[in-house]
Length: 203
Image (tube, rainbow, N blue to C red; front, side, top):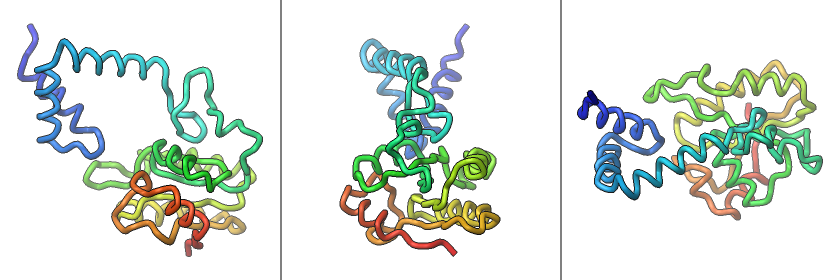
């Protein structure tokens, strides 16, 4: 027999794990899904099933791709610059930077950031994969294209510290025009382009 209370709480908990979704918002979303179980819940279930079957995070950079194109087109493209690697927090950031058109290097998505509140530490990020890439790829510059909040600053500091053994590698961070406490996805292409062009060295 299904425990109705337990099922609802589990649905709320799952929704609450999504970024930007607090517990109250998760509860409202859960009630709306239940109220529209024949339409909205059905469509969402179908969309999630299709995504689970047809989408992946690229095994190399972390961008969204398909099972039959992994590594993704950005990683295999001969037109990209192998000597510059842009580190971002999420696959969404890669899409935003590609739209601005000012970066032609390679990418590496961490799939998160340091967050004591969420319980995310260094082991939860793709840092080991990043270090392996830097050991085997001809990267001369790492661009830390992270957001501008406290947790992202801590993540950038950790990465910069881990990159110190790479003496000849330049480590930079976006500057000029990114408002404090904001994310890449909220920046327009012109602002992002200027930030990429005006990146600064990380000491």
